[in-house]
Image (cartoon, rainbow, N blue to C red; front, side, top):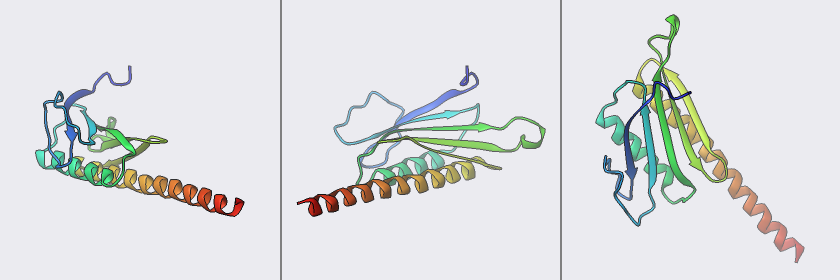
Length: 144
């Protein structure tokens, strides 16, 4: 019902060295983020796809809390917003999913802004988890 006009443009994996692959059946023993890229009859360049894979690789570097991602790009409808695009990035993050959504006049700008929004939320979430663990350790020391 909601994804009526969406089409799957490509599905690719991000592995240790960022690669864009249309062969989803590749098996790797490396930690990888599976990315679904949905476009609403729009096209993005291979440079933008490579930028997306590098950015997600940076998100995962040193962490194992992201299991996948979903990026949706669509053109807004209606007369005042006909030249506006919305990018929505969902990171499947433990314990809570993170969603960054932004609107812009260009597709790459909307994607970059959505990544910036999601990155800020990801940093805040990781900081909160780290602080919670530190408080728990400190309380354990004082309880003894």
